[in-house]
Length: 326
Ligand SMILES: Cc1ncc(C[n+]2csc(CCOP(=O)(O)OP(=O)(O)O)c2C)c(N)n1
Ligand SMILES: [Mg+2]
Image (cartoon, rainbow, N blue to C red):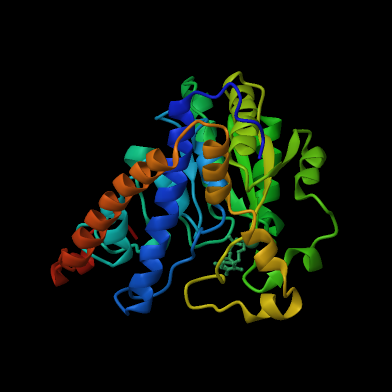
């Protein structure tokens, strides 16, 4: 991990609390699926927690986020209400989108989340548009566009980044390179080692960062956000990371295990949550007891959310034809 020297204790506690909450939140979502309580699937962010945490810690309350099908972590990092998130994932009326969106369509406009998105690459022009609107209105807001390595091969990525560069839009493109797009190995379908290199073709900085290290991610995010707020335009941040689970909760990822048998274990040994915990104790920022207190507080919040979601009602049939715009 990068050095935590110079960091305030509160900030480090914040990093740990957020990442731990993301991890526990998704472990419960996985349980919901296994128990048959969840209709459909969910794409888990487990393993990638340092990315959303580091990036979102560099933002202000009124900044924007374009999220993805793997978006739970982005929402937790923005301080979204985990009761409403869990309820949404279970299709309950008390959820963020009244239970009609599910995992892939959680909207939390109060947290600047312009929607998770089931269309791969779909969030990139949306976040770019939000950045354009901030510039047009003369605010100092920035927009973050999260997307995967797979999405970086979509036209929306190239078109958006070109426009944002030409117009110096206040947007940060966060490429979560977890090495796979469903079962496709990124290394088989691209011919560059670092996808961040693509930034140079559009005349903007492209930065590679260890996506398992929350401090490293936070530091590059801070710089990119400052640059965007100063009107100097977009940055592409490639965060090297890995998803612990299959593409979604129903995918055992056999394709990955067969081709690259040790890969998962190697990445799991770099667990972002465990690494930070270890560093905090080793550097005498927190005692083991203080860590346990943080974890217990998060656990209470998680258990309350689980209970709330499980006990909430499903939407009434009359809701089927409301909130329809097309
Ligand atoms: C436009 C579009 N094409 C294909 C799909 C099917 N699909 C869903 S997720 C996914 C892989 C995305 O990979 P990546 O962008 O790397 O994100 P990750 O799942 O690894 O986080 C694909 C191809 C889709 N939902 N939308
Ligand atoms: Mg991917």
